[in-house]
Image (cartoon, rainbow, N blue to C red; front, side, top):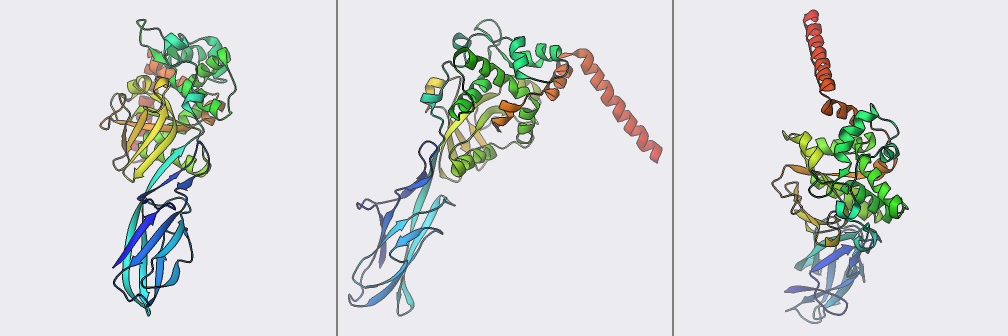
Length: 383
């Protein structure tokens, strides 16, 4: 009978390896090496046998994976796991040969856990305010912030009094819908942690408001369009972990509670229910489920407790108390450059005109109807 033992160098059993990094560093396995001990019983002690160790691709072992030993002696290898894991369970096996014939074989499964951290540290990189008017102060669609946010828009005054006013606002409790600048706060905190933004005090507050308004720029909208019309929280998660596994950091923020495009109330939901957080770590022990630790500008004191749980098999997620599994919402993950460099808002300013101007809305409907009628007449003329 062949038995296998997987042990640390000091003799403790190993059931699972952790593939992890430390705050944006390179990924490595914990423990970095371990022992495999093979023992064969009930054989003549003086019989020379050949042992073959089979490992996942890329892993190394000392001594060689094939070696000879007498039947009554345990065989020991020191194994060095290498490379990004391709599964959450790896098989290790040992086969024993006597004169070229396999006489015994044993297998062991080793679980794999992924844990990654970006350089973002919630305790160090959080902003000095929470996403509340009582701390950040009220926000109105000020013309100075508007000019700093956009370089080119259509009908600027109508846009500032329309869609921009709906999105970039935060009021005191009891004075209307509270609003918020979560997107600007998340983007500013992440940019500062990556060295993309250097600002403090009032200048930092202004940058938060400007970055919040940048979600209406053409770059930001186009960067998230495919993710909105092809919703998948699983893909957003994969983009984040691929960043960390490849380079140790990510410039993605997560827009959560984003309505799926087929909802009847999609316009109202887009204007009222989205929320932005900074993903900074993840952990995964099985293919079907994962967790992402996020910094939430509305709950900055709860870092470590604000966790997105993803059901990867059904492509859904929960983020209590905002999102549950059954909600028809997705995650949109957009990089920083769309917010730091986008300055035109042609699409949003045109949409604002249609949404908030009855005359423009009637004109748009008239144009669409005329276009449909013209196409219909053209088809009839070709018959």
